[in-house]
Length: 261
Ligand code: DGL
Image (cartoon, rainbow, N blue to C red):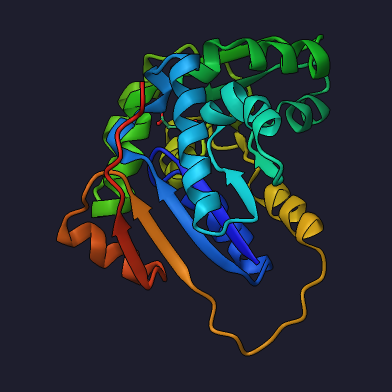
């Protein structure tokens, strides 16, 4: 079994780490860093680009693709399901669990600008949290800080706190924050530090791992050495390459294909 992952950056690794622990398979992580951040692109751009990236992964043998990005899922997963026959697992903000937990008291969603302002999330809120006051905040700056932290172990506490302190989340006192971007679990500590200590953060990594496991079915564990391949669309530097080795990616490639217009 070969499973593909797609995200614009390192965010999808927060999902990949959970899936990979539970499902023995060959993995290809395709990081579209040429076009990071996705949260500032149009829907038609995201759909065309995700089509192209999915096609590439399928040519490389992927039999299931995880769109490890809320922005790409909310804008393109239905489009991809219409065009390809393999299963796609998407990641969407945990609105339903947040509503179950808040019991009408309201919660906040931290996402990219595209997800925060998009129709897909508005629909999830109408469907699952009609009685909640939901504060939405989209930030590409937080995406960049997560990149800096994961690649270079930078201390980003102050910047995260500065961003959140002027956001609509500050002072609202909602005790539940949905991490609606796969980059943000990497900033969980910093986000918690910037908010009241009892704040609960919700993400969907574990639920995605369960879903993939269910789709893949029971695979017999063998001694097979699984492959973990990382493909970026813009060349990585030496520090990034070392980091990937530490994260278990034994193969690294660059596929610098631009979007076809
Ligand atoms: N990791 C992505 C998400 O979950 C997108 C980050 C970006 O490129 O804006 O939305």
